[in-house]
Image (cartoon, rainbow, N blue to C red):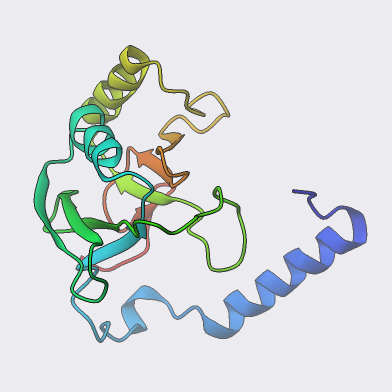
Length: 173
C-alpha cells in the first residue's frame, strides 16, 4: 500500500493534529464510556477445526463454546477466552466462497492482545516451534509481534498493560 509523501504527508499530519485538538479530551475531563467493554469480537473463518487448532493449540486461547449460529442454519459460532473476561468469536458459513483477506475499509487490520513480558516470550517461542512467521519485535518496537491467523486475521501480541499505549496511559485508573 503506497504511503503519502511530501506535501501530502504534511497535510495528513496537520489534519491529525487538528482532529486531536478538536476531539481528544484530557483523561481527567473525559466522561465514562456508555458500555462495559468488548463482550466479543466476531470474525469469519474458513475452517472451524483449523481455527480451533490454531487459537487453542498454538496461541493457548481455550475454546469455551461451540454452537450453531442462531442466525444462520448450519453455521458454527464459537468462542475463545482471550483473558480479562473477553472473548474472541468466529463464525463459519459453509458453502460460501470467501475471498482472501485484504486490507480495506471495514476489514479488521489487527487485534492487539495485551501480554506480560513472560507470555510475550512464550508466545514467540510457540510460534517459532510451530514454524509460524511473524513480524517483530525487530522493527525498533520491542514489545509488539504480529502474525496472521489461518483466515488472514491480524493478531498483535503487545507486551503492554491494558489501557496503556507506548508507555502512556490512555484511560484513568
